[in-house]
Structures are given as C-alpha cells and as structure tokens.
Image 1 (cartoon, rainbow, N blue to C red):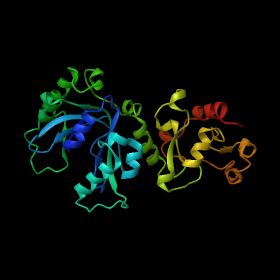
Image 2: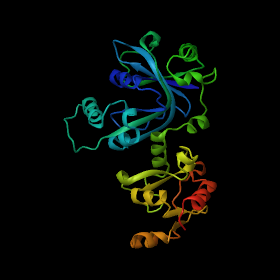
Image 3: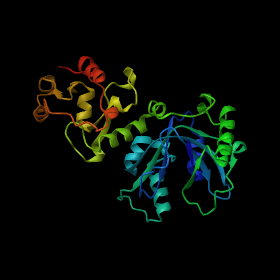
Image 4: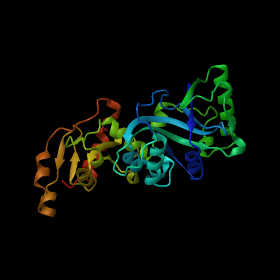
Length: 306
C-alpha cells in the first residue's frame, strides 16, 4: 500500500476542520493540468501544511481523480471544496494561478476526491518526514512497507485508533480501505463526478455533451433504499433527468428507452421526447459501471407511469 503526503493550504484545512461529520472532500489542484494517478482507490492521502507549520494535519482515503470545471466541482461538493462560497473558491484559484480576476473565466481544476476525511487538532499534528524537502511543491509518495513509510503510517494509525479526527477511527485496526469498500462509501459529490467520467461526459439517452446541463441521476433514489454507486446511476440531461425521476421516462433492463404515454396526456406536449422511444441507452465500457438490471426493473415497476 502507498500513501501520498500532499502540500495543503492552511485555509482549506482550517475551514474543513471546522465542519462536522464530513463524508467526503474535494482536494482540488488549481492548475488542472493532469489527472492525479499516484494512488489507487482505498489508499490514503495525507494533508501537510506549508512552512512554517510543516506538519501532517489529517487525511482521507482516495476514491477518484478527475479534471473538471470549477463550477461543476462547486455544484458537486459545495463547501466540501474547502471554501465558504464559490466566489471565494474562484478567488483562491486566481490567486494560486496568479491570474487577474475574471468572472467569466472557466477554470479547469484537478479534483482528488477523498472519502472518510479526518482532521486533527494541533496537539495531534505529525511533523513532516525528514525527507520531505522544502522545495516539494505538490507532494511526495511513500511506500508504507518501507521503513520511513511504515513509521509514518504507524503514527497516523495511532491517532486514528485513539479517536483523533472523527468517525474513520471507528474502523478496523488496520485502518485500511479496499477499492470496493471505498466505492461503496461514496458521497453525493463523488457520485456525481464518477458518473460524469464513467459516461464520458455525455447523456446516456440523448448523447448531449454540454457538461453544465448534465446531471448524475440515481436509478433508485437514496431515500428509497438506493446508494451512491456507479451501477445505480445514469448521466442525463437535466430535463431528461427530471422526467426520469418523475416517471415519464424509464429504461428497460436491456437498455432501451421508454417514454410514458402520460407525458402527452398530462401536459399536451413533449412530442420530441417520443422520438427517444426504443432508442438504445449509451452505457459505459466497464461492466461494473453499467446500470444494474434489477435497479432498472425497480424503476420501471415502481416509478414509470407506463
């Protein structure tokens, strides 16, 4: 197992440390030049403050990485981006990029999505490893089987076992997350970004690619026993999402679109939606990310207006 010690903005840390019961956070990178590929799902990313603090102050477990427009990241995570408002998040992006303020600019940022984050009070901070040099800008990876990595991880586990940092301490003694385990604990924001990437940023029904109007839809809503899992999601254009949630559109287990006759009867409109009837659903290439047939059957039986 590996860990990554990432250089962290103190304002980001202090803001999130004051938020109770966080299930996920977006550790974003202002440059947005490349996708973070250092960790596998379930491996830990630790937060290290800049000098003069130079200490590890918390962390989380890696779930997914993406490049996304800052406004989409804000819509997905809100204050879990580590800022009290979207304008403040934009100001920080512009400051880090040394760019002039431009309210019309669309900034692409790197998103590192972490689940089960933990933030320690100053008394529990861990001094940065001796080999973490001052000129390291983004961070440094550690093999936790190596002497230095093992020593660092023992310090982290000691704090988690003692209850420092929140609910992650309630896990097993190993404090280790497997990929499946992590993907079963996604929050709403992570669900949205994973669905967006799995469907390659196109509506599964209309093939629309304008990202601002694409939304991650639950096949079975969380309120009705669904979960934030890839197999329970579809990426849909906003109007199609609304019709799907209200039962005017559904999808068969063999991935064909159905449009309810009630759409015309209830609203005396919507003829262009009937052109979608029987069309094939666009699904991700990975079988694990494709919608589960039993969930599609549930939607057809329980939600669809027929």
